[in-house]
Length: 497
Image (cartoon, rainbow, N blue to C red):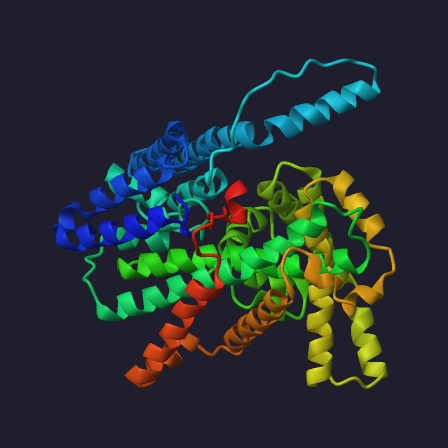
């Protein structure tokens, strides 16, 4: 069930209405049932995988809690708890690896053996990647580690824990919530509040604006060019690659914004997943603002356990490369994604290595780093690096990435002025409207970058102004989105991960 579908527009109000009508003590059971139904709308048989991950991590938490309060000596307690964590990770990651990386592993192995003239018959499995498996697996594993670290107590109620893993607004594409935030909210008594409904609806429609008005419209141009890179070389590919950076931002941020809005209407507070990432002035800053729930997950559960920056510069650089290579692999079972992740890690390592040289040049040339021009130069440079890496992400394979890079070298600047850009699936008026919508996004993100809470500021205005702002947003989604008799809800990009 997609957020941008008629089914969800019927499903969500019914779920919310009944949630507030029934007694507090059974609300979590109602949400759990609705969450499982929501997930089963994609493929009912894969609910077994969600349940398996839930049971494994739930039992690991209980066992660690029992070990903690047992009469074992301290050393044996540590060993026992580590075994629980290891078992939970092995079982969950094995399942994730089989469904997501089996074809990549067997294909790579077959190719390697082929170089040695050894023929390998690869078994064929008709596997469909379970939607959201990467997200709920990481969320469940974070609970295991949090219990191990004594940051939370193990949840005794299985159904409440199952709701934490499967809470439907953020189940299939995040944000990847922590037990310290979401699990504790399940025990809270939520009352129907006007402010929650008002702000939640605004977030939902802002998410729809990002997805329907921006991401889906940009997708038409990007798909037209990237599906035929030999026909659209040079500046066509450059513009499509730039637009893809905004497509994936609007698509993914649109989903998580709708998720936050839906949760807020029911009284839950989900973490913000994006914080004006394209206004970052270095790649490390970009990753502190992009997909924050995943970036912080890797920091807390991989980077720091590897040693972080505590064991010297070389080890720090190695840890950064490991984290971003794994992040690339998490996103997709292709070496193009590994390259994408590795590039983002390499940018940061090279940036730190070259920092003394940059400081030397800035001091020698008496460059003022506080000027607007210097900041803009850094922002544009960061965007160029990040966007170049997005090329491999969008291509999805090394072969297609190579083809796109070669065709990108064609020199055809005339398309910028001869109207050729209006033949890429959307006409001139649609293209101009797209640019206006991008300016709206840039304004909103700039205000967020300046730490101005637009929603809070809006709620301080008079009722007529708030109503007008909501009406304009609602109208933009209805009139300029892709709603209509021929509209088919398009899947969010991150559902494939």
